[in-house]
Image 1 (cartoon, rainbow, N blue to C red):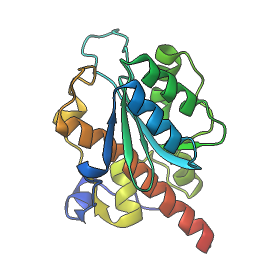
Image 2 (cartoon, rainbow, N blue to C red):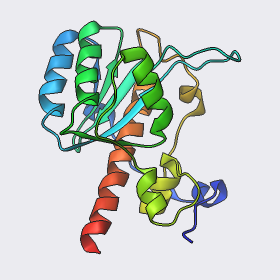
Image 3 (spheres, rainbow, N blue to C red):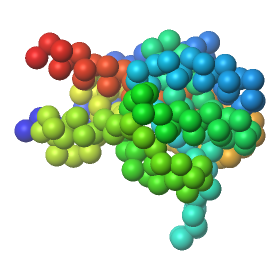
Length: 199
């Protein structure tokens, strides 16, 4: 049975190289959304994740996702969804049957997408299904997957995780955090595909 890295295992690893701010595009207007779509709809696979404003009250239903991220090999696009065209473009990408969206722990994301955007995500892959097929019994998050595939440590800011993703103006830390979740998912997926090719 493959070993799932523990927190203690991961803390001693070298840092996973993050995507830098110059390669992150914040998409919060119609013109930016259309430009992003021209690039993203031509990709065969995208790293994918979402962010939602946290809920703190029992029974409170999230109004998220408030942010949806798509990563290519060169850039990561961080969409905010208060603009109607941004929402429309994100919905088109999520329902595309030609663009694979690969990410981690997507069951919750897909539920929120159905409720908030009113679309059924198509051609979406939870990367954990590949790890399960390889014999991993525990669900791997992006941090564990990066440790397994690259022997590196992926840093996630707890402060950013629990921040208000519904804000119209996102902080630099939020944008970098969101972009790297999708970027790391793409890198893990590509590494898994490389392994399959070599096998």
